Length: 265
Figure 1 (cartoon, rainbow, N blue to C red):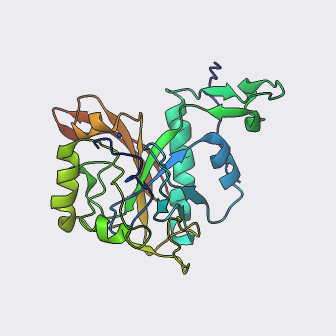
Figure 2 (figure 1 turned 90 degrees about the vertical axis):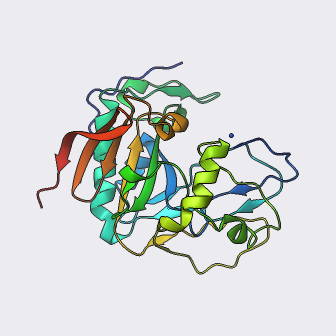
């Protein structure tokens, strides 16, 4: 069984224009979104080693509101994406060699030796990694990362709530405009919606299932706007079922920096 290598993992202890809470909604994945975002933390990845079909939870980045929920909160990687799941764990470990994990003790947690990373239940991982799941054939280098490209989000949200705001990863008018105007040119994430009743103001928790192979982009930090603006030097890993490749932004273009892993099977 594959184990996450811990070599190089040092431990350090230690939103779009605002809207009024009355109009805000906690929106998760909506049909038509180009990606499903999640968060990589070591505790979850170690647990997923035991799962044939690991589940990823939606990475919600906006302030929580009190007017209910909209959308789908989980994505399951089925058997056709099993190699992708393994490579995601490898990619996390590769990043941690240059960006060590940071853990914060939970309140009243019994002291343990966090440097051996055996009792992660006593700690919060404060620098988890952002991951975006896309269709395997999504040409991400020609589109903006972390933009939902969903021109029909208002209609989809109405299945859950009457009105709501659009929770964006890049919170600028220009980014929202691009998402709406260019959405028709970007294929949505190809997933099967679960057979679940939609209840007003409630998210759907049974997971989405991919209809085809996916790929994942893992960002080295959470400054989504700098990725959107194509700032020089920003880095990400492209993870597929076959390989892990590092890309870097140079003069507002993505350049392949290094192939870090190739599945030889």
